[in-house]
Length: 216
Image (cartoon, rainbow, N blue to C red; front, side):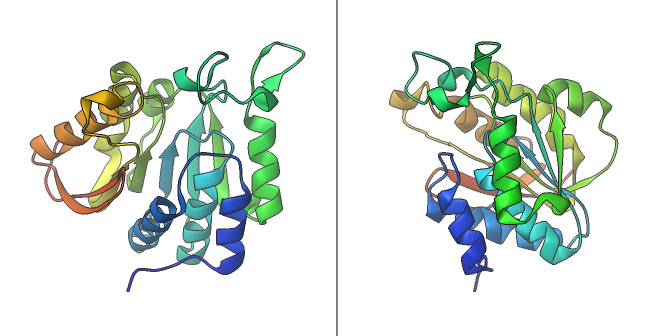
């Protein structure tokens, strides 16, 4: 039976601002708990306001490791003004740009998980270039263009340890979903074609892969 978060953790997840459905969140949590058994950090690309971070942080706490989340906190393409996923509450009125960092910090504080998360504020490719240690799990949930999703894969997949998990969100095979999930889908296909990763599970748009070979 897959590991499940405590009721209070699930309640905090559901109350947090964000887009991940509960079914996918439960699958992410189960993957994070399994990966936590390696004793290595669990890393997320794409923090937004911390909804999925809650699950990774709780799994990291249970495993005695740390969750790391990477985001510039200025919002991805589909979250900008004029797009369907834009939330005016995330705009900093003083600078006129999105800033999800304050909301993220409140989310973690309210969930009681601040001590189990390292928040890295920066652009994923830049952070990945200076990263130098193996990871038990990498969760790709950042920008949904080929440039950003592909860059996240190229930057972070090499750091997934042997037996570790690569989790990809918003994988939509239907070409009609070009603006929401085709780039993650292409990353998913690329990971499988690499021979380095083997599929573990599919839950709606969430794919869990395990490193079973070398390379990316």
